Image (cartoon, rainbow, N blue to C red; front, side, top):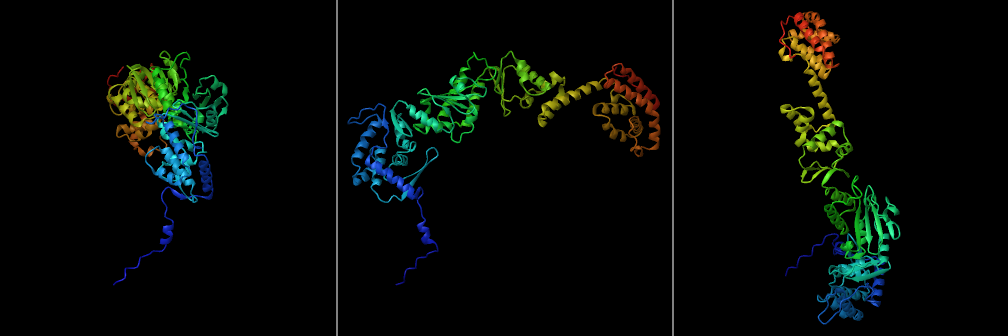
Length: 573
């Protein structure tokens, strides 16, 4: 009979079997073993050592049970306690599905106390309560086992009572005390004091406490500050003031650092009242804030107390709830201006006078309210209010330009039709800084209006007079330097006029080779008349001497005569 094939082994198989680990289980250090052994010995001596002090009312327990979870637990714990030395009974009870989970976990813990080998432990991990080692025995829940086996820990021992908390009962734990207050949240002053001394924010004071950025007088008197602050008022009368800067630097959420010492932790709002001490700059002290804003503010504070809102986001959320509820006047940033103080509102906006004029033009065209968010979104609102989250004109105008740019161009600059549309579209794409854009637009339109003073349109003049007029216009609009290249590129008679232009402005030194001898000869003869034309243009366009129009006409006629251009068409004047 053939032998069975030999078992195949690979190097390292023996070590691999030794290193096999069950997830969530580890070898306990000697220190952990000693701690667990000590705690279990204490528990074996007094199985009810993990229980809180009962200072709340308890319901009665009858044959049919009780509606009070703590009353039922006390009865069951008493039964397990009486069997603490009966290991066989404890092992049955710790795996039994019936009965309360607290008594089941207590049975498992007492059974573990009878064991000599405590080297293998389970690991409990919680973002809120931290990590802890415990002995997993029976079918008790990890949190309950951890809480019973760490009953000297002021926070971990609360884990035993999560079901009771869900039923509406309250527990408060601190270094030196642990109480059950029944269905009424009634924390002892010792708990309040200890908890506030161990929060994530450093506090000063005794019955009145305050963080950095505040002082005792501000908190005691409930004074409003420009930045705003959070007031917490506990049932025992302790008042706490938290500044915006203190809340922005917490390593652990402030509400959680308090609530982790009570059960249920999401009912912190039952033991302290939160109030945001702030009003917009400019809001009258004698006026109450809008009811809608107060209601929204209360919702935000309750969300924070339930540990569902980060400390760093609280300030902005509180301010926004108030600012967005204001239904009249002007709201800009964290400031408020009455409906009669439009000038104060506009002066508060940072920007140029042209930007403020443009913003005022938009306000004139509004039929209702408007809200411009910092992300550029524009919202129409029913109330007659203007809300701008940015206090700088530029981002506000960028947001409003698509809808209101055409009215700005028409009302302020008098530009309409295709010209206005071209300018509007160009700025919508470029999003140039509005200060520079409006200044350049103002300058270009001003130059265009001045050029309208010239007696002829260039297209109405014969060559080379039309070329001379074009050179004058370009020099007035863009500067003399911009005309040099244009003068070089003239053809025929325009070339002679170009040479004359360069001579008038002493620009011929490096350009004579570009012009033939005939062009230079003709152009040289036209220089006096062209110089007179330019001098008249300077007086008319730069010096605003309207009487120079006649000088410009006579100079153009002189240039027409010397250039042989013939009689001129009638001027616009």
